[in-house]
Length: 258
Image (cartoon, rainbow, N blue to C red; front, side):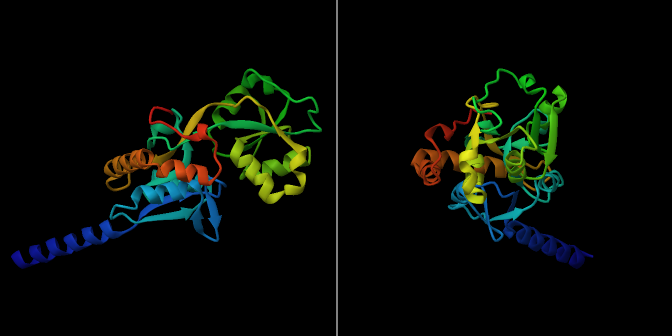
């Protein structure tokens, strides 16, 4: 009996070590310039920041590309440590934890110039009643849009919304300004002059890791990430990465921004 217990102990010990040596799993979706899917390899501003955070640790990171809703499900089940990039909302905070913010976030409404030749201005979201909106399923604004009863067509990607703008199937779509212009330059550069953006942002918030409460050692790993992120800000590496992707200085964050 004693021998069996020793064998079981050694087996559990080796399993623990094997588990500890497994990479730390993150899930994300293509979201240039923040996340760039280069044939399954994660590049872009945020993967580079995450890799820099864990560079001087014994933690290996792994990035998996999944659709937004599927990635969120993977995190909720503890199949991945975190998904990114995500905006903090009270609804999400019921089920997930969040890291310190790593980028400011200024989503704005894109539109087609010929639809609004004199531009467009707004004061509150209710001002968009009577217009056709394009959204992405599961994004931070869906609850607000639905609560107001806005006329929204939900699709799977921001690029689909940009295409629908061109075809006059929607009037507005809400997207981070850097992401929006990058999508246009990359996929439909010949139409870049057809687009414009409303000056006023929909909100001023920040991007975070959205963290699983079921993943092993998630609390300690979150603390490791937050401390590593602050170290990058202190030693200047953080700002170098931000500038590499031509993000304006206002996209830098402090830990107090939600």
